Length: 143
Image (tube, rainbow, N blue to C red):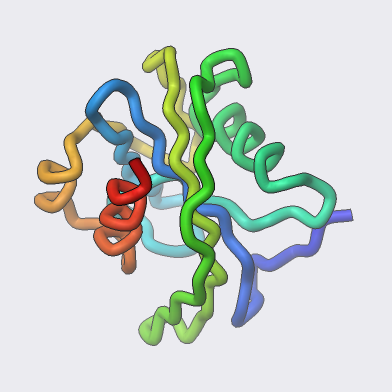
């Protein structure tokens, strides 16, 4: 059974940076999302009780981007840390991942309204979710 963290003050989340060649996928959060509508981000989702972290990464890729496990070249785990969003009065236990893909053909789900491929430097010019820039710097350092 999966725990529903939708309105929890503290929740474990998976933060997934998708990379194809030398660019990262940025997705714009749709107006249907509960938080951070209209801001650019990477993939994110609540951690499930019944899936391993790698299974959760693949699940999010399929659900939000229409990609399959065969499209994944490599999955690298990054930091896990506590991020406090004072504006929302929420704590996110963030598990960072970098996923390199072999197929850039993305089909966005309802969670996102737009996508763009950008270098880490180009990503700095987008209006992003809280902590995105810091997380991207940690992911770039993973190489």
